[in-house]
Length: 115
Length: 114
Image: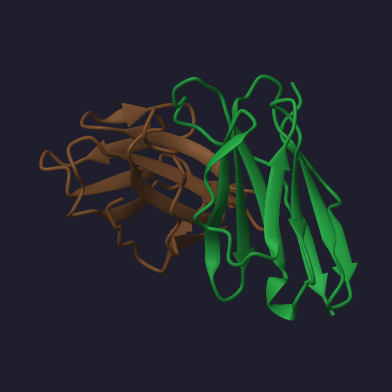
């Protein structure tokens, strides 16, 4: 079956612009996570969705970052007024519910470059 | 979540067993040990998990010490495609009060050589 997909695969944007990154989780997976991976910081958690709710937003680095999930499926991560330090690979993962299946399935990521 | 310690890098000859150690001396009774790996330019991939008992699946075996303070991931016959960064993570499974988020350390870079 289809895995987690993310789009775009690569995004180059100018400093100060807004960007939207999309994640399509595995069908039926109720849990969705966003992570990012940068050279200096490794893999870090950003936000967790259970259905359309986000009970854990503790990893979002600033108020320029926001995310939403609609219909318990697609999620969009939005970065406003991008900065060079936002350059990273943004990874999405999903997991089946209601309780943990122990596995998170990751997408291929979106490589964001802010110039 | 408990912190883990892994060697920065390891080499393994193709066809031989790769044994990747992980220390998690502060693990709590309800925390599981998970292993993920990340092949270059791909998202992380789940390998295996365990609580107390040793576990085996089609990818690997997980050996957890009796005191649960350390574990070893074993790839029985490493191939060149197993070259990746391997992450050992300990956490409480997702539930009503836990998000199940993964906290990644630096992992072990395994280089499988011909």
